[in-house]
Image 1 (cartoon, rainbow, N blue to C red):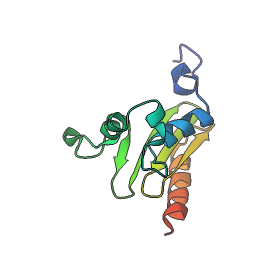
Image 2 (cartoon, rainbow, N blue to C red):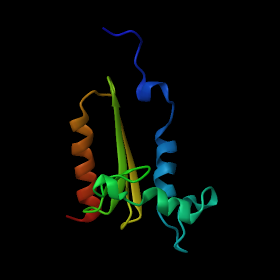
Image 3 (cartoon, helix red, strand yellow):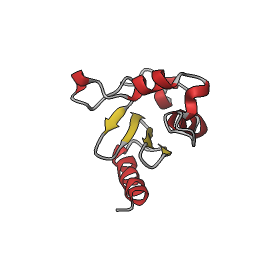
Image 4 (cartoon, rainbow, N blue to C red):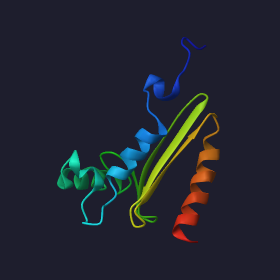
Length: 121
């Protein structure tokens, strides 16, 4: 039984541009500083993205950590909406996938395609 009309992120409103800026904040500029360091200190961003030991190295304070692919990201879903975002730190690139679908596997397939193109494999 549904008691309310579901909205993406349970009503949290964001855009692909907002998520892209969030992704970009953890990438580095030409000087080696995090792009988001104009808002948060380099040390705070480094702490935010470092894998936490009690998670088996899979989660930071803000992201899912994929050490195999040198990337950070997260995904979300609600009936009718799915999202996935990833920052590929060793290539200094990020992307956002927003989908009007309840099928999360579609985002995973798009993610794997993009990741393979970015990584050149």
